[in-house]
Image (cartoon, rainbow, N blue to C red; front, side, top):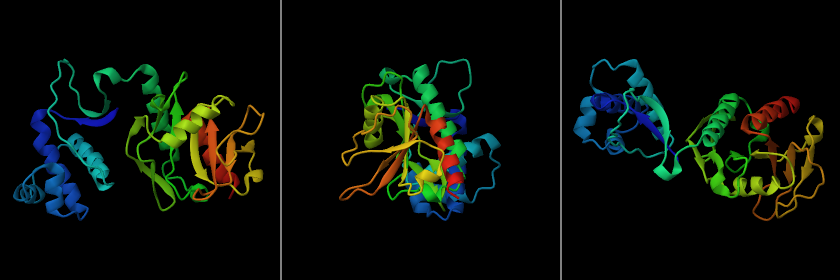
Length: 262
């Protein structure tokens, strides 16, 4: 399973933890909680938070990213990594087990999903926010199961009707979107999907649409579709799925739909 990782030199580890402690404390997080996040004693956290030591900008930037992830409810683990590279490894990476090394195709999918997020970040999508978590899934060209489909871990984070953040990209997550995407690929030419709220005024958009049956089956002979509607069922809210050739294509459609529905 692909994981997010932040790399710093061993001598910068203390500075990194110090910066994280300061940032979290500024966010009004109790020192007792910070000590658990960083695996430090509370007196050490107190010492860090009151420190006036100048922290390099690059370390502080990494600390801000990690602090945001922690603030969103994620746990942290600190490890020592030994590398045999002549190059200095520093910054934000994705890592995997040896048998899960990211291929060029996987890397392109992850990058496409992140690019899609950046396009959507800060946009008002209030008309399209469902009750359930919103997510985007994208499949490999020869995907055969959910392990070949990537999505945002725990969905996209929305605050004040705007997409603000995400907790990483993973293959084999978002089982519903993955299975639906794999099924739909047998009927229409798509490679990505995003779940949104039911679009009542779908006829006001310039996009082609159709409907799914209650059990999420395809019931159309059209090959080129942009939106699939589901009327809901007992315990399932009505929703819509925007589909496209990749995650960026889907998000561009989402942005245009929002503009057309204003």
